[in-house]
Length: 126
Image (cartoon, rainbow, N blue to C red; front, top):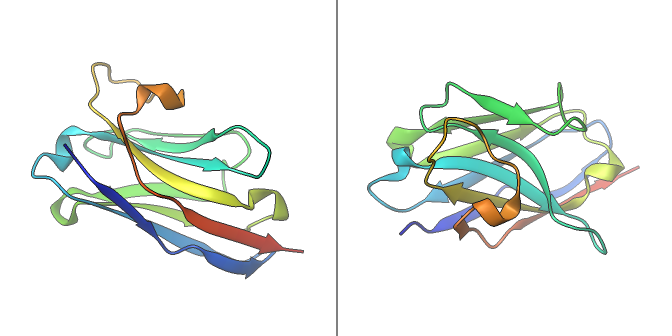
């Protein structure tokens, strides 16, 4: 069992930056692979970025490669999403998700993730 709480969202102008934080509870946080998803109004929830248990492996959606960076600090039970060069199309509710991995691969389907946070709104104005 793990609980996740996102923070750091807000309103930012195009070209600006935000850093999202996902704070996790649980003594076995380091055993979970973590990912960020986002959902815009009227659209399906989509994978944004993922990170392995140790932080050695990461993966990103093509739309955010080179702009977003996912990282984790297992000693602090936290995962982060640094978002730079933000675009209006990045506007969405951003969710943190956790899964207990049975493979070294970072999985992208949302139904692979057991635990979810409540989300934090990111709005990018033009």
